[in-house]
Length: 221
Picture 1 (cartoon, helix red, strand yellow):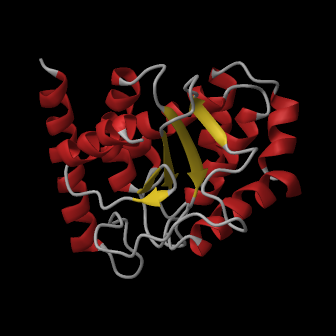
Picture 2: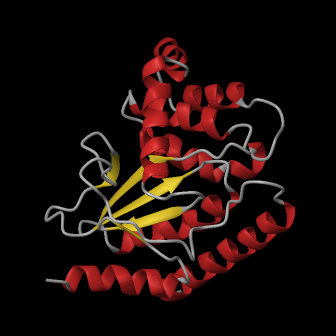
């Protein structure tokens, strides 16, 4: 199957998730920022900070894609295969960073972010990041806390559980997530997933458009 076909298939799933989310949402929306202003990063609120988590780092640093995400967001889960395909396609050329933006309507969005952040302190951010999306349908949209489920994921990853439990709800971990959320709000993020390409908020209209914008960024002066 071609790369374009893989991306298009992921986009179909993404679109379906958005439609379902809009149909059942009662307050906040998982809808991507498709028709919202495109504020630029400022000196006071950069899209990428020195401590921002980067899953991929390009040697030339020319093109950076940043996702403000919520691990419980169905639209984020549906766009995840598209992001992973882009990471594979542009491996070594594209810097990809993530920032936490759990939505208030999701019972387990913030504790999921805390689990990923706690895992990052043992160099296991990416495995926990992937586990959250790969299992989202098993724990997402629950009214009950899934803290114990996430602790189980940490055990599966072979983490030091004494450290993980301490980091999971530490003031430092919570402050890190809240800093991302505040930065996102300052930048105009109101829903997830919201993508920034080289500091500019994107209008996520199609997979082909996203890929074209990335290609254009590589060739820009």
